[in-house]
Image 1 (cartoon, rainbow, N blue to C red):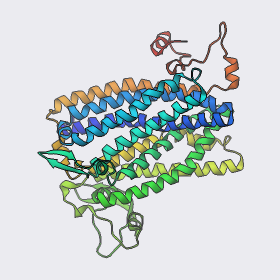
Image 2: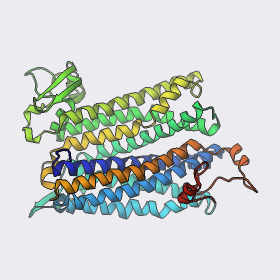
Image 3: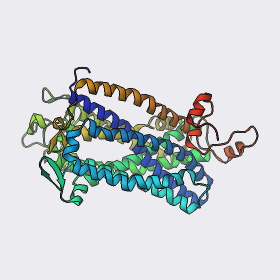
Image 4: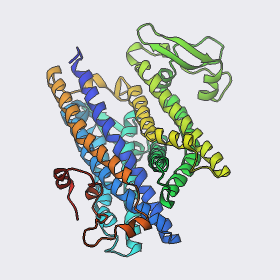
Length: 479
């Protein structure tokens, strides 16, 4: 396919599947915690608006959770099909870590998900709230184990290599490897921020169409507080993560900055924009700010940042890719901080729900958090190259012995199936969001009875109005 080798196709296939997958768990993490907060506020205050929002977003959470599970299973199988050498080499570490995730997080979520989604009128409020909290906790525990495994691949420790295989000798060092705390905090906060902007965009969409009610206002208000408070914290976490990466993977930082060489005795400038050329070993058309690179990356006015030419060419990641993926992530993060500050200014002036330019920006920023997560993962994973386990196993040595023809066919099938299945799922999620939360007035208008519709309890029945009859049957029909 397009003259690509088997290694390139295997990497593209995994990048495609993991990019689809990561969007769903990230939203699941954020929505689960959001639901726990909503139910807790409803129990504390008794305000019906929190209950209305809980029922609305729980349907979206359920569909998103299901798509996350399915896409994750497909991705996991690729470790054996396309990356069998990696599985054989590092399976002694990655296998148990993924098993711990299943035994703790997945079982916790599966055990209480049914109570959370279908037990509202079947169990007491305390038990139902506990179920919601435990599901939210399960998503965070899952994040813990997945990030422990991935972080070990970035900064491996606590192991020995015996007969060409990794043998764990200290599980605490394996799990709490040097990059793990920073990556865990960065990913969890990214999930919260990304979900906040999805919820905020939903509220903005309804307000722009004149659907102004307490539930929609509460959605926008809560998410804008989250944007104001969480985005600066994420920037600080990102700074600590960058310092940790500079310590353990300096070549990745050099590639992210498009920085090829240092001038003796001079601090490192920050390249704002440019085009890193891997063949010519220079960043072309660059726009740079003197000293700023040393100040940001070293917190110093004189210390230099490592340059790409200090490392062998075979050990350098693709600077062209991660230079721009990193800037996309940072740029979106700065926009999110701006949105939070603008929201605060409008809130003080009493125009948070009326400013149409602001609402349009929030609507357009709906996917910004998810795009930032993808850009961050591309920066992290492409920046680890050419290693699949940093310093221990090269990516070129980890791939299975498949031919380009086989991988081209399976990649094409993956793209086709994913676009059809998950495209349909995402479309259904958007249909749910367009319906909006059912308020007290809405419940009275659709209270049931002869000839009247009712709000269904099942997630797959909540958006069937206006759909063809066959589609209704496919999605679960009416209650």
